[in-house]
Figure (cartoon, rainbow, N blue to C red):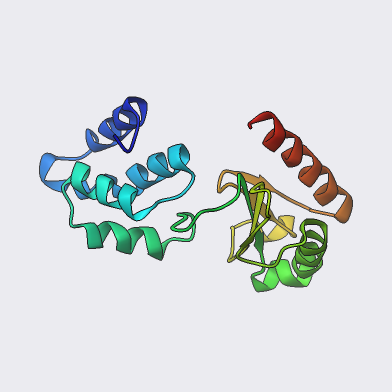
Length: 165
């Protein structure tokens, strides 16, 4: 089985929120649940979700490739997305990105050799007043990211990556 029973139960809860003829409305939640379990949405996972929901596989793939929160390629344990939209860029986003690139030895869309980190460029995260803003694994927003705060974040994430091995 591609997804665990626990993941299927979560997807079932999402499906129950919609009438039977509108199961496709749960596709975004189902993809998020699948990604939380598998870390990325492989073609096999996309097909499984499509079959489980009862949607054409191409429709599920369209959703997964349209939104940047879905990983359709393998990523590191910690995906760090830097907001580079204009307000963040003007308020330290470019500096934060440069510091992260130097610290991790990565460019955008690259994953570290040890599989701990993937660095991504992102658009507006809705926190322009908190710039520069980083998003970790699409779930944790980090604001006002100075070089010291970036260093502390990378250190913390490195330790959790070690513990999670």
